[in-house]
Length: 151
View 1: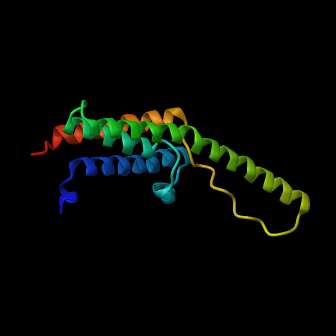
View 2 (view 1 turned 45 degrees about the vertical axis):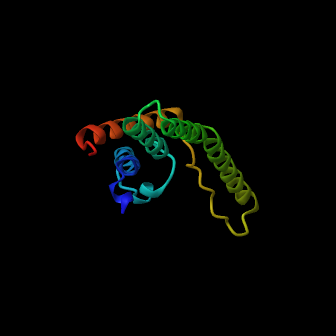
View 3 (view 1 turned 180 degrees about the vertical axis):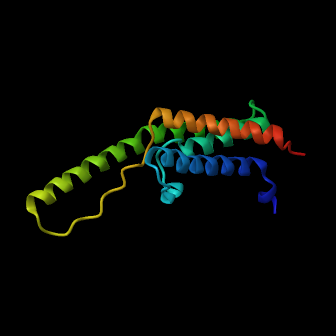
C-alpha cells in the first residue's frame, strides 16, 4: 500500500501526534495532573493544526521542491488553516465562553430548571500557540527529511 510508504503523510501525522502529546505534558506542568482528554481536544499550546499543516507544507517542499505547484497548494492550505485557528475558531471559543457565563448567571437567578451542558470553549488558538505549532511542524519535517532520507 502506497500510503504506508508516503513519508510526507507520516511526517504530518507525526507532527500532529507530537503536538498533542506535548499538550499533555505542558498542562501537566501547569496543573499538576495529566488530563488525557487533552490528547484528543483542539485548542491549546501548541497548535496541532498548525504543526500538522506546516509539517505537510515543508515536507512537500523538501520532496517536490519549493518551486512546485504542489508546495504552493500545501503552503496556501497551511496559511488558511492557521489564519482560521487564530480568527474564526478563536472567536467561536470566546463566544462560547461568554455564553457559558451568561447561562450560569441566568441559572443562578432562576435557581431552577435543567442545567445545559456547557459549550466547548477551547476551540481556537492564540498567535503564540499557532507560531509554536508551526515551528514544531517545521522542525519535525526537517528532522524526518534529514534523519530518514527517502529513497
